[in-house]
Length: 179
Image (tube, one colour):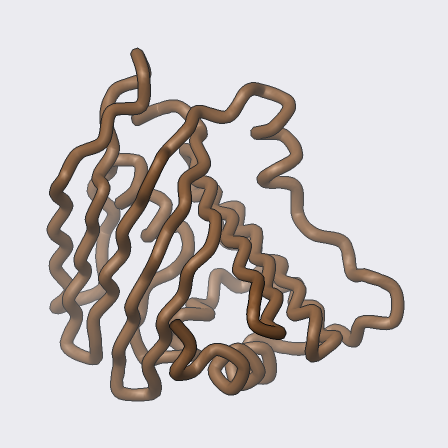
């Protein structure tokens, strides 16, 4: 829609490497910026992605990720080859160059005030799996909230830095089968 926003979300991701069910808060803005906050039931996960750069904090595991390679954390977890920047572009109404064989569908458009509309539902189907994403109650972010939401995360004290594969394994273990 061209305006940064935050919304409640639920997602189901199933691929040849695993399945996830997630619920939390999502923020999205132009230029591939995406923030996910997932908490509850002993699980806590925070991810901020800005284009090719991703930072993430997994609280129960004491792990911190800072990746500049543009690697798909979602692919490492489930096998679904989507990057955070591609998901953000879909949420913003753009037409990202999806991986070969992947197709996206968006529907149930939600009004975001005078800024336009955004999809309430997104489904991306790929040869190796599928992402179903639902948004609820989208709200525009003011300038100060936008600046805070998409700042790369700093490593918390006593957290250990880990790579994409280790973080993916920890997320898969912590979130698999959750609702």
